[in-house]
Structure formats: structure tokens, C-alpha cells
Length: 262
Image 1 (cartoon, rainbow, N blue to C red):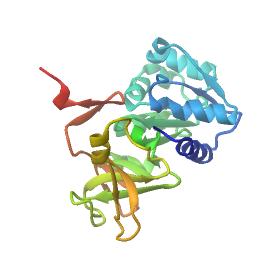
Image 2: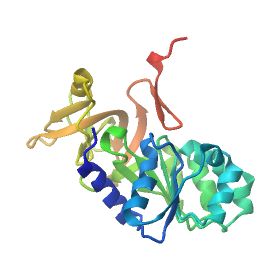
Image 3: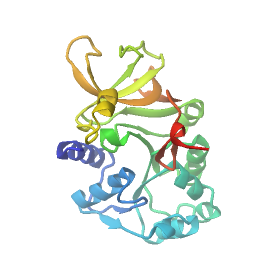
Image 4: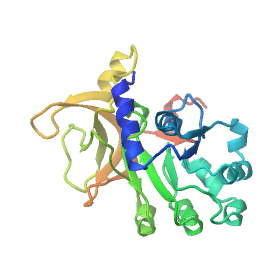
């Protein structure tokens, strides 16, 4: 279960970080059952923005989506990198150069593609693109990184997923659940207000994924083990390096290869 405090913490952080006001307009680009869409949904509801809801077949077609974004003057959206890829590589994006009102695009649910970000940035340099990382177990998002033109070489070498949102702590741990040295790879573990209470009626899974440790050697803290491999850069940002298991993310959904029967 996710606590009210966790959701309020996230929405309050995003509202401030993205400078959301009642003048903004956003479009829901995922199912209500998928937490990717909660960024748009709850920030709109709590800030009095315009929240646009359209059938899935509308936003899954690039030409329809681009036209809607332009005509309705949508100012911020959150979507998967897969959908962003369809959007960026459609000819209408360049045909409508500087005609869309988008000031912010948030990407989440999958690893970003640097070529797509670079291509969109050339046409819409005024639009901020934010990478957003966070498993559902940590309430929508736990890390973020705003891209700029100087990032693209860095992104091509590894996905920078950034720094923690408010009241969130990130630790890179080894197999013994000890902190690894700066720059070394380890499992990304997340603590703080956003960590959920756990899975309902799944005692074994809870004990595996939610741990209570003392990574700094004194105060104990509850952490969620993401199963993702990462390292902390010299800029104190986390770089995503892949999975420590065979899990994949496809259009934002988790797929366990071991559970697929041939």
C-alpha cells in the first residue's frame, strides 16, 4: 500500500520542481492503472490545471497526438520513452517546429534513448526534458535528471537517472548490503518517505525486497531493493547500468523472462 504522505511528498516536489500552476495544461498518456500517469493526474487535480483525457487510440497515433498537443496548447506531459520515440520520429514534429506549447516533457518507465532527446531538442530547444526514475514501490518517482545539450555525450554512454526527489535517500549497495565506493557499481536501493509499506499478503517477497539496514554505520533505515545496477558519479548523480537479474521493461511494464514459457 502507498501512504497519503508518500503521494503528497511526491506531488509537492514535482509541483515546485516543474513550476506547475493553474495556468498549465496536461494530457494523460497512460492508463489510470499505471502509476506513470499519476504525475499528470494528481498535479493537475491539486493545482487546478487543465487535465485532458482522450481515448488510448488517440494518443497512440503520433499524428493524432501531435495535432492534439498543438491545438490544445498542452504545456507538460509524461510518457514512456517508447511513445516518445514514435512522437519524435514522426515528420509532423519538424513540420510543426516551434508550434507546440510544450515547456516540459517527463520520460519514465523505461531507459531513455539519447538520440530521441537530441533530435527533439534540435527542433524544440526551449522544451525541458526530464528523465524520471522510480519503481512503483517508491511512489511514482525517486530520482530525476533534467537534460541539456551538454548531456547528450554522457547519456550515450550510460543513462543518467539523476538525484533524489525531496525526502528520499539513495544508496548503492554491494551483495552484503554495504555501501560501495564512489563510482563503483552496485544495487540501487531507495529509502525515505516514498517507500511503500510493502506488498499485501506477500511476506516472503517483502522480506526480500524491503530491508532495514545501517548503510552509514549508525541509524537504521528501511530501503527498497530495486534490482537495478547503478553507480554514483562524481557529480553525485546516479547512472543506470542495467539489471542484476533478467527483468525487462517493455513500454513501462515489468517482464520477468523466467516466467515466460516457450
